[in-house]
Length: 124
Image (cartoon, rainbow, N blue to C red; front, side, top):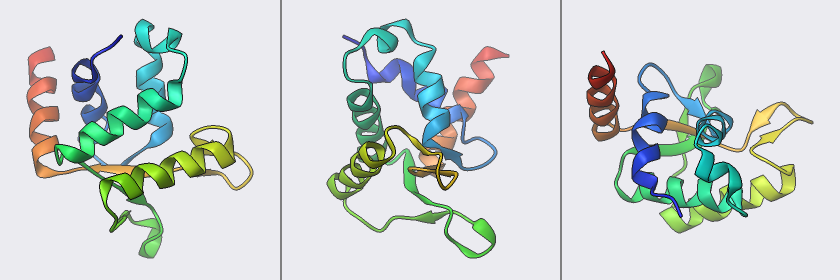
């Protein structure tokens, strides 16, 4: 089994400068050997996203705003996770190659930014 806690700082670092998409999250998770052998990779992602949302570290949405800007989904956590799972299944993964669009985008909250920045400074 794995702990989401080891993934969280790495995921949040993706959002230090800009929004980030689910495909980027998946790529980070694939770097962890335990995640790579887990039977249900989508479930790992959903569990991680749930922890990020419940702890108010990220907002999840899409880039449907004016000029392709991030728009947070105004839904409850369980509804967001359901929508991500539905889109993942329809797309057979975190990215829809047919229309060139990610299942969802993420934006760090202020709390998420603080954790990412502290984690980043620890590397230097």
